[in-house]
Length: 137
Image (cartoon, helix red, strand yellow):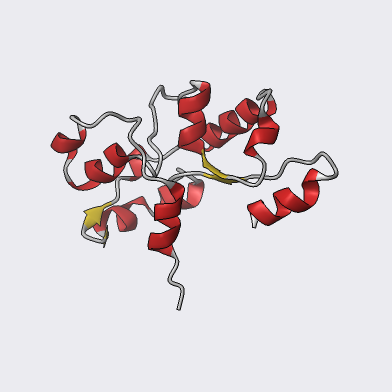
C-alpha cells in the first residue's frame, strides 16, 4: 500500500512510507504481560520487557522529519529499528532494538548464546520476508 501511495503522491511532492514498529510496550501489552509471556509463538517465548517503548517510534518519526533524503524512502516499508540503526538513536532506557530483518534478533529468540556471535548489520532482504508472509495461489 505504501508503495502505491508513494507513486500516486509523488507528483504532489508528498512522501509516503510505512513505519513498522516491533513489539511495543503499550498499556494493553503491559496489562496482558503475564498471559503473553506464558504463551509461546512458534516455540518461542515472548519477553515483553524487550519490546520498544512508545517513545521509540516517536524518535523514528523525528529522525524522518530531519532526514535530508526523505524522498528516497518514498513508497518503502521501514522498521523503527532500522531507522534507529540509520539515525543512531536508542530507546529512552538506552537499549538498541534489532529489526525483524536482523538475523541476530531472529536467532536470539531461540538461541541467545549464538546471537551474541552474529553482527547486528546482517539483515534478511524485505523480499524474503514478503515471500515468507504471503502465500500466492
